[in-house]
Image (cartoon, rainbow, N blue to C red; front, side):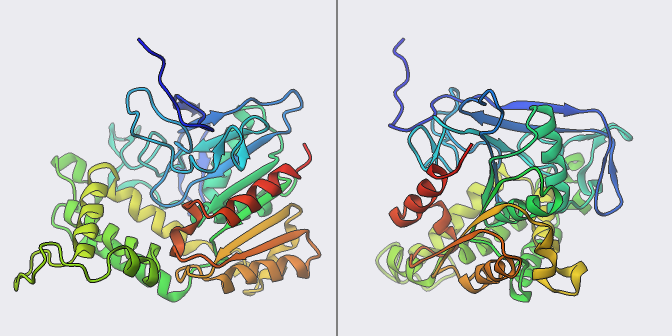
Length: 379
């Protein structure tokens, strides 16, 4: 059999791994997980000094599969494969990269689909609400498990960037660089509103059963697909959506009914249908709540500069002009707070048309900036 062919810069075939932790994990809510598992992947080689590790944190609908492909699923390419690999901006010839599925997830880490040892049944709706702080705590346990005392960098986009920021606050002595891309120091009321509509779509689905739908052999598919459709609208800019779909009619003529007329309708339905086949509704609820709850300045009188006093890392902050969900002004708040504390920070605001999803795209200015930042990073 011929060896598989990979595109230039691919990390190639990857295999998910699992770390098992027997000790309880105390969560911000006051709840405790009586042990937990984390699914993760690694790319590259940890150097002798253990100084070249980079943690990549995922956003809402991603997981630990950051780069490469699976032998049994060659079409399943890592969600940030354009960023991570040999010779890519985050170069695995130089760095040891770790991707992890957060607790509460649905891709192998302990979450609502996992068995609750107290009942012998899936946690379902009884799984506790988790926060960004909880994820960072669990990630620190994984770092210990892998023998990594200090990360060269923690990196993420959107919700992943919130984790990269929280690392500098929870473990200021364990992170040297934080890459915060397309993010915000806290959600606006409008963003919380989008998340609440999505949650209502799920929880009012007749198949939700208070989150215990596993026991009923059903999935709140209608609610989950609506939540995904709503979310997807917020990830794209108006210009990007108009350029890609415009007002193109699917059949070339109006149907004068409530089926699909426009290509954008077809696209959203496709995205919603696909998402509802692989993502867990209970996980969606918890991840959106983690987004809502993230607010480092809350315990400092809403003073972000006071909150960021704890940070010691150097920062790269990147925003995109067409990102109306996490607008550049929100990234500038982070930069301002860091400068108030005389921290080392580089800021790049990129004029890109893709909306919030720009952090996943191949914009050459963006990729070049990340590449240059890593190339200048001392190990």
